[in-house]
Amino acid sequence: MKNKPFRIAMIVALLLFAVVTTIVLLNQNDQAGNTKSEGYPPIEGQPTMGNTESAVQVVEFGDFKCPSCKAWGEMVYPQLISDYVETDKISFSYINVLFHGKESELAALAAESVYKLDPDSYWDFQKKLYEEQPVEDHDAEWITIDKLLEVAGQTTEVDLDELENELTERTMQDEVDLDAELVDEFAVQFTPSIMVNGTMLDDPFDYEAIKSLIDQELEGN
Image (tube, rainbow, N blue to C red; front, side, top):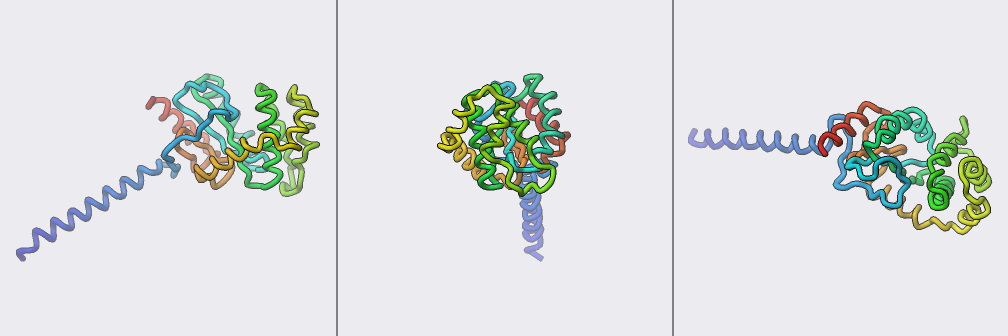
């Protein structure tokens, strides 16, 4: 019986430890199950629009070959741009993902070249390239040099011979490789992946969750 107070104290201590551990684990993810990283993706040199001086940055990790990225661009992106980019509240950047192999890489090379040669037309080029995705048979080869030159001719002022040479010589390979490193560093598992500052959204199509997180970050800065 002499040990009873000690046992009670040990039980209380263990319970407190369990509670604290649970709180810590819960704090690693927000209510939507979003994943918090230790840092933010560096956006210097990345295609970016909006207020680059804002304390809140939103980054899309996207793959031009990805049907879900096309859907996100049609369903969520316009509202995000209207609510936060055009109102100068945040910055929005795009980082290439190469989950679909050689076609993804070729499209990323073209996008990086367009961004270098005619940065003002980058977002028009990006939008049009996503629109060119086939409605069916997404695995079919459709991202070719000819297709990329066609899209660039419709959306940019880039010299197409120069762009073709850039693609042939893989001039922007270092930039594409850097994006691949960021995909690994931030453990991107699917596309599109949307990151608000250091937090990766569990569901990129849940605009209310994106909005809530952005507003929370804006209020905290």
